[in-house]
Image (cartoon, rainbow, N blue to C red; front, side):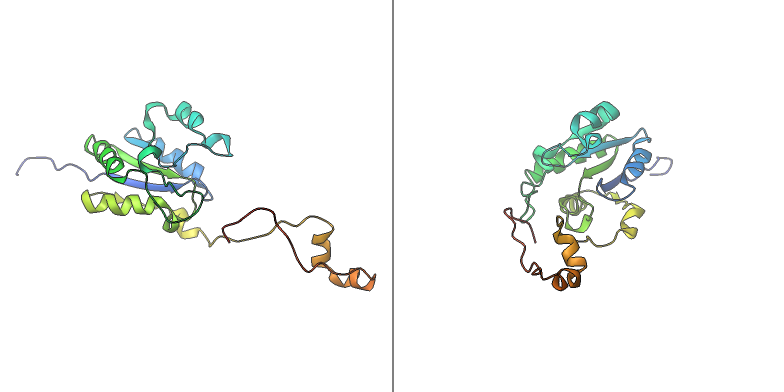
Length: 183
């Protein structure tokens, strides 16, 4: 209608704090008073103290919300993505958006395209008009590098096998692990 102000489109920022430069990016976003940080981790724990629930709540107060009970990936330790209660989680996100907030969807994952945040964003876009803003960090991110940690003297053996063969020491040809990996 003529003379009516159009409501600005709300924004969603899906961010993984495992990405290089994510902490500064998140702090810049949270400096905006209309921003709410939605923690989508199934469990709001981290090996890094600054990303634990208590630290985030202390830093951002009521603008921090843990939503892992609804938006968390039940298979966060491996397996296909399974959102805990997607319908209820999306309802909550729409309420924040309707109240005029922009949302920062937080997880640890550095790869957005393999993270449950993408599933959440895709489903939200099907039922709500939002602008999704990816951090510039995504464009700079490279593919993950897989590595093995090897204790000495085995690392030296791998790097310089000739020294050990010349000394009559048989090279190590197998590495046994007692734990499982995703690879």
